[in-house]
Every structure is written in structure tokens, then in C-alpha cells.
Image (cartoon, one colour):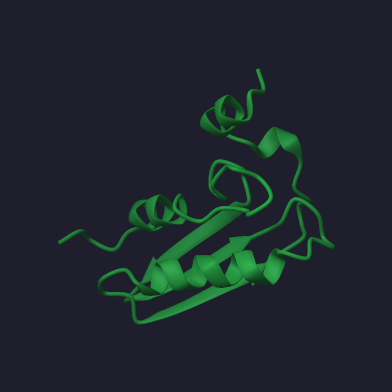
Length: 101
């Protein structure tokens, strides 16, 4: 049984993808903050563009994936716009998947 930690939540979020980009939301740099306290998980995340029509879908997928984790009592996913996302937020793994050097 894995312990519920910030790291385990981030690993779970690597299974959530932006349907328009074949890279998970963590490696895209969309997840800004994860907090875990007494079974309550809160995530601050953004989107590549504020008007992204897939935003609610992606946030829902993130919430559902976390809710599946053991010991999770409650999940809150907040979409935030500050700081705005930029391509510099993409991790090295994400850049490799996208073919960006």
C-alpha cells in the first residue's frame, strides 16, 4: 500500500493527459502545486491557454484520478491563471516526448 504523499499524487497525475497534446499534465508543467493533508488533496493547475475548451475535462480527469487513490477523502482541483503557463514550464521528459530540445 503506497502512502498518500505529494509525490504519489504527482505520479498519479502523470496518467492524466491533455487530449490535444500527447504529454501528461505534470510533464507539460500544468500542475503548479499539490498539497496533501489528512486525506485531503488540493491541486492548483493551469492550462496551456485560458480559453482552452478542454480545461474542465482535464481538471475532471485529474480529480477522478486522485479520487481513485487509496486514503483520499476529498479532492479539490483549482484552475489558476497566475502565473500564466509558458513552454518553459515543460519538464525535460515532456520536451523529449514533444521532440523539443
